[in-house]
Image (cartoon, rainbow, N blue to C red):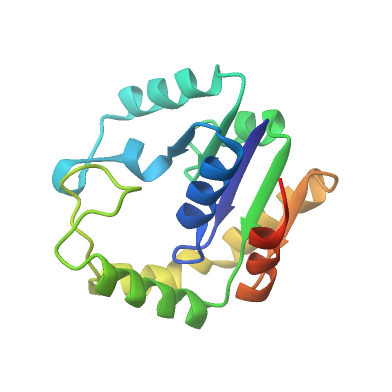
Length: 168
């Protein structure tokens, strides 16, 4: 099985990916670990793309994250199931703050080593505004329209909890 997980920052993509990986026993790739190396340094683009291309060759996978330049079209086409998490900006902000408290001065399990959890002005602006552009919203809507038989749009915690309640 191949699962692609996309959505707004702070909506629970990484948590869902970990849950599905543990439940279904599938390998997971968090694209933030591909984009960033230690200390929030951006990985060289060709190296990052090679990592994703290699992971796409697996028979089964979960790939979590947006990153259109990391073979998003191929991920969506190959995926048996696509989750798009579109929580409200305020729900996402609450989740990001809770995540920051939980991982204070630590690196989350879905980040590259040395990427200490942080919230700064740029990230807040991204969560509340820039990461929710009309273009991004239209892109998610287009994915749901292009792949209706395999796309699940999750808009809130109740819908996400329903995914967690399902038996594999």
